[in-house]
Every structure is written in structure tokens, then in C-alpha cells.
Amino acid sequence: MARFIYRMQNILNLKEKMETQAKNEFAEANMKAMEEEDLLEQAKQHLEDSYAYNRELMMMDHIDVLKLNESEGFIRSAKDQVRAREIQLKMAQKKVEEKRVLMQRAMQERKTQEILKEHAFETFLMEEKAAENKEIDQLTSYTHGQKIKEE
Image 1 (tube, rainbow, N blue to C red):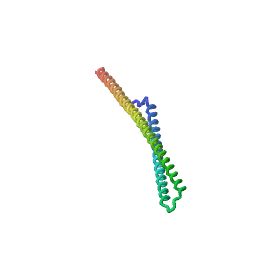
Image 2: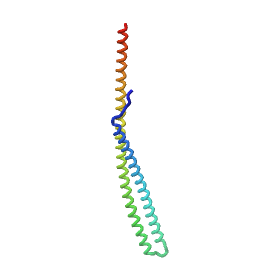
Image 3: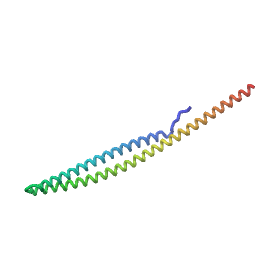
Image 4: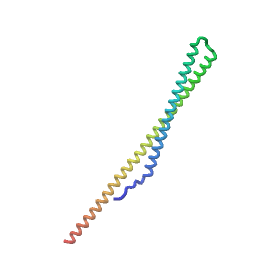
């Protein structure tokens, strides 16, 4: 029996590499999004701490206006940081979605190539079986012809 050689194996190999690369890029984007989520949570915690500090200043017996103004500046800064982190997180989540779509497309392309390879192998097996049957028929005809000659 002949050996099966898929003539588009190099394309299948390329599709597998592209899928692996797309999976890696998706994982990297996902990690970046998780980091952004953590940074957003830290920024929110900093904002809460700033509010708590401001409340403490307000509860004191004597109010230090300079510290109160400074505290309100911290709050504004913390709010700006939270907004910036929310924007960064949305951008990271958008990137994750883009990479997920690319990964799915790469997986579909690889699966398509694998299906084509399976069909090519099935065709190969059918051709091999047909050639084998033809050879058996020829052998049978030859031996039958030899028996007739001997009689």
C-alpha cells in the first residue's frame, strides 16, 4: 500500500501556527484586561480612602482648611484616576474581543484544512482499494486463463 501524503500539509501547518499565535495573543490581551481590572479596583480603593480621610478631617474639633483643600484635591485626582482606568479597561476588553474573533477565525481555518485532509485521505483510501481490486481482478483473470490453457 502506498503512503498517504497530503499535498497541502504545509498550509495545514501554517494554519496550526496561526491558530497558536492567535491563542497566545488572546491570552495576552486577556491578561492585560485582568491587570486593568486590578488597577481599576486599586484606583477605586484609593478614592474610597480619600473620601474616608476627608470625612475624618470634617469630624475633627478644629477644621484645618488647608488639609481639607488638600483632601479634596486628592479626591479629584482619585476620581480622574478611576475614570482613566475605566477607559483603559474598556479598551483592553475591546482588544480581548478582537483577539477572540481572530482566534475563532484561525480555529475555523485550521479545522477546514483538517477536514480537507480527511477528505483527501478518504479519497486516497478509495483509490487504493480500487487499485487493489483491479490488481486482484487481473490476478484472478490470469490464473483463470492459465487453468483454461491447462485443460
